[in-house]
Image (cartoon, rainbow, N blue to C red; front, top):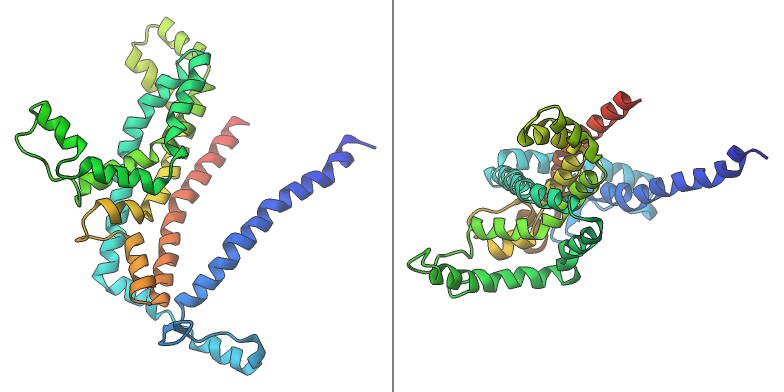
Length: 304
């Protein structure tokens, strides 16, 4: 029996598992959310109509399909509150991702250049914050950033400010919380890419007379682009829909789309509009994913 026959069937089963996972835990819930987004709000349980009842017969199902509409999507496009929430979410995500890249890249580069025995220690130091609850870490930042918190005490002791600075309920506090929480998601893929880079490439560029900044810009950074892309996506996508950090650290004057979804679902009980907002958010986030997939495909084709 050939090796191809021996491993063909397990390989096929292994390939089926991700598709089954995708269908059960993404496509099926997405179908329910899409159906609710095309429904209308109702004072009932569940709080929308029409409700598909398989036992009601074919005519009832046909009537339920006919009652679906795209009015909720029209509302999202015409209401400035939702448009502003999307724009603010994308702005915050882009700004925070840029900050994470600026901070995370030097850290990952330094980790990759450490001796092998110290790289594991550095890795543990990066992931140690994940060993505590996410909410506890954010509440810790509330104590640090409050009027008489640790940050203001340090700034006053160093005479950098003459009076305590207002940090809480500002965008600065929100960015601090986001950068702190998502920094490992940027560092780890960058470190994985930089650590497997051949040092002889940088040494060859230096031997040919390139200054250190040119070696970094023309050799190191282009070779680390796959890690940059992975880190940017791992941070950008969840930050766009972030709810906890903006709700606890930022002000309530301007909402991100995650806070808007929460209000529509749990305060206004408007499930159809909230579902439509979630569908539009998913469509927006598919754009960078498709661009990254296309870039990776092009790199693989060039590498053949």
